[in-house]
Image 1: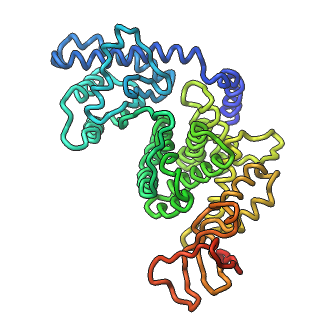
Image 2: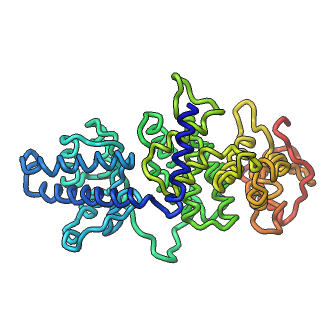
Image 3: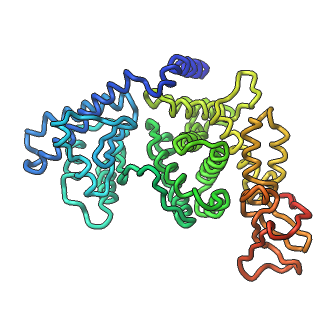
Length: 459
């Protein structure tokens, strides 16, 4: 165990400089070369399938070469994602460029989009018969209904669960405002549990980790959460999620809140969100048949993510976040990374305020902020924590409050303006006469109402 951690730290140190210039250039060159071969061969196989039966010996060489190229890429990268974004082809995060003459013949994106597919992720190499199966499915006419789901089901039925299909991708136009609505956020939030389960199941099954599904989900959440109170929206949607997804997604949302408060760009928010999604990935691993204990889950998570080949900024940030997200701000070993400091705040806040059946939360949301504020500059980054407090307000969502007029209410909003720092929007729990409201009833403390008591969990 210590040797593995020492080796991981040594690898991080050796690759830090290359990570700072965005990517390992030697690796990128090799990936572009092999990725170009993979896309060109796949495109050619689909063209051949229009005029030849798949058992024709003419397929033997290109099928074998496709398998070889894929195997080399898996050795370099771990999971390999072949993506078509409009008229461009990407392997993982690298765009593949073709010679002009070849580029005109590349219709891979058109062949995939007929089935509602924007790309494929290969979690491992394929044998020749599996390559032929994929070619057959893509070359065939689209199935009625949800063609992509039908194709994925057939792959699963043939034992090819290592191949994952993705929906269509497109570029966002500069200045384009994504559609936003509360129902959309709830829909994305609830559906995200499947993505998280899939990512963690892959890791638990000893597959190499792939951040692509998590990154795509993060972009959806960023778009869907631009309007409305995303912390309260997340709380409202939690009833439909399993416990592991509740914590992971709430930590991610709280990280978005802090990231936006300190002015992070959307691309940096996406990197932060993926890092937050993977922060507890070490708990997926097993030691002697048992789950990894808390004191070793950060190192277990580091070992998992180090198995993804290559180094670039986003990966380095994920590694440092997983390793350092419980480290104190004044850690004698040095200042934790920025994303780790953000996740530390979000993670501790959610753990301390999360409701546990039969026990309730450890602390009320106002008490939690007060306790964390007492550790500002010690456990927590003082600037990040101040930004978090400024967004959550004096009575963060989840606070149960008694008002001077006898109402008992539940805070359901973060800070909406500087003037409403201690005046959240609240849902009425009990009327002054002790009865429950007939339906949903809200009081905006910015328009009146004085808090006289904060109820604590033990009450």
